[in-house]
Length: 106
Image (cartoon, rainbow, N blue to C red; front, top):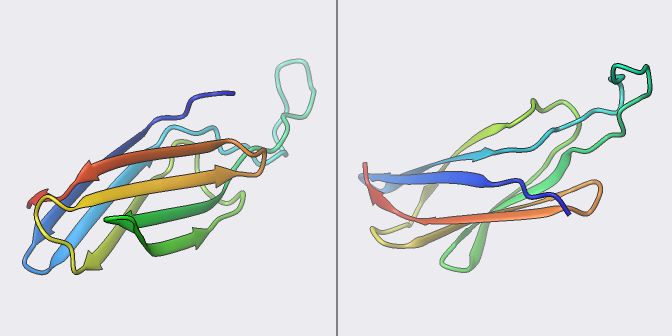
């Protein structure tokens, strides 16, 4: 099982928290070929979720039209300084990843 780290930052400005998540993931479409001419199998994130203190606040369904090592940006209301933000993903091969951070002043 491969390891694809997530880097997350959550900045609170006023009542809005801006969340940026960078996922190290190949995001292969299944259309590219390797140097030997063999098709590289598809591997892409299908579901990405964001949780605030254990409660899901966003769910996104993705497909092959997302770049390698994607950067995701979200804005949510209701978070406070020190609250826990967790970003989870599942790809089409069953690989899973997760990362967490706390809300800091922006």
